Length: 407
Length: 122
Image (cartoon, rainbow over all chains, first blue to last red; front, side):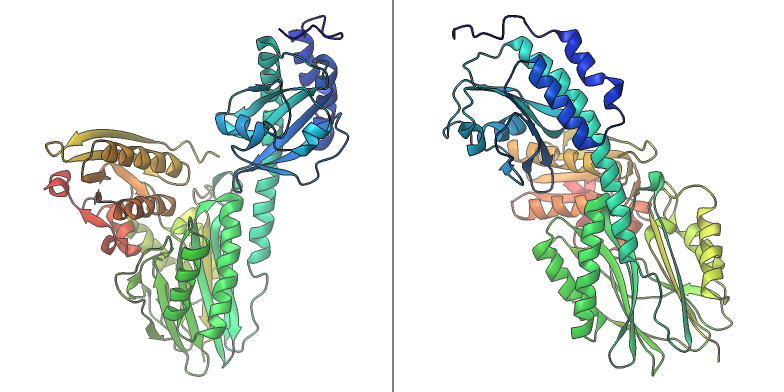
């Protein structure tokens, strides 16, 4: 046993610990204020010299110091990889770790040993089994942390984890929504003889996904139209969508053929975003000849209503989706389609027509029937009302309508 | 995140006179369940390797919906198996929503797809 040290005469009182972290006064604080307040209370109740909270970034698999009390130096932007050092070990094993020797052999962060700590206790912060971060306390005098200490710190960690997760998921949702909005065109190019309208509808719970549409002019009197769907949801999908959108625009400037653009996009995503997959329909409208050159990467074919006729789905060979390093069984192809004046072209994502347990066909039928020769805005309204009604969409939905003004 | 409380049930069993493992997925594979589907695929694949078998059969005849997140999980499993000596076979009924999802995306020409577990192990 280590010698008893002054200041730890009484075991930490369970009730006062719980009161300290569930106090109503904490409820309306901002996250950083909340953390500092809770850490100060932990410092008092556990009679420790330092307390710190590190948050776990699931994408980068690192921990970052979010708040500390009692530290001389602030670890601005200090990150700890999962599994490395003391906090890395707590995070990787999702179990408490107690150290009674704090030096470069046991702890990676020089901040902790420079502080002169002699003992450390760290517990994982978990919500429903998911790692949110690590909470640790340190003592500059030798101390043996007990099972009781560990259990109590666990209770505190659970409470702190819930608050952090609520805050982070709210912030993530807001960021994803803002990102998604910033990436969708707010106005369309002004081109004689063409009008556009589009809709983006988030899925249930207002969760944005990775659906996007894009319209841009290209050199040589040409226009690019895009619709795509990144597999996944939330901030991660929105970030990948942003990268795909930019990369596609860049390749569109270099290569004239949509198939070639998608081939390069596929190589780029497979190499740099290995875990991502997307379906894309990309077409180039030649304004001089009124022709659409279209290539599909795993995406549902767009619909076309010729002047005075009902809409039909375009027949284009389905290329495989973008990404995941798949080798296409055949080279991607372009399909060329005439777009006479008065035609309406509609591009959409699968959320519009897919319903669990139902065949696609009746919904595709209703979609085609809802496409009129009205102005694009009315068509968008008609299509979304017909297919989505008033119920919230399960998956997010994107719809882009292009009309060639009747001559 | 939760999307309208959808769920999937997965069962895993040895089949084809011990030649392969069949992972049967009942329910809807969408955003909410794609992670569970991916985990079930990984576990089944580990099982195939641990037993020294040659085939993983992914039986989607009881699957009512296969969204893009589910397709991505299938493709990942396919890429994992194609690096080893294990073959992954997807079972989907003709004219089903699952088959349609595979056809629209052109993935029916990349993945091995058949219409019954017997054919998959035959």
